[in-house]
Image (cartoon, rainbow, N blue to C red; front, top):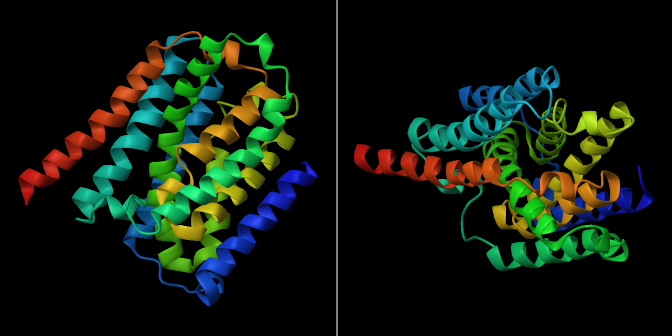
Length: 269
């Protein structure tokens, strides 16, 4: 685990504490049925990812589990349906709102710039520009899945039930587990990679706790961070950036599923 990552985690926690004040350190015990539902939803991708671990990554069955099960069901259907149809809430219940949006964008850009510095120093000429762009398109489907499920549905309900610090740690732990059958097999040392992903989760969820606005994570900081990982650690843009058929399906689900749920909610009010 790099010193730069540990320092960035510390900066994110310090900013969250400064912006949230004493409330950032508040601890409570107020779980509800919504807490349990969010935890179950956060664990489901880990279970599906464990199933994916048993499948060849170039197989149709693996892609169905990843794109339809993990992304489509867990990332786009469950969070939106639960917040809008069960809680009878609004997209603000997923961190999608206008409060502190300027600060959120500023922080996102600053942290994104920090993530991009080592990427820009790397030799990007070995990758076709179309593959780099394709990798961004591909990986941001996963970015929206994480945004809706782990930041919106899970983090905010853990915060309400237990406080900001337990929400950061718990969300980071479940976030790291969904990579069991997807990213971890790509690393030479999966155990060390799992620890690294937990640390990345701490960074991301501490940053989210600065404003509790989705814009602080997506699209800028997420895109910079994931390209940092896939270029510097895995060297995979050429592999994942070629075929855009499944990412196109993923983007269609990311847009159509929430829109359909919003339409259902509108007709039921």
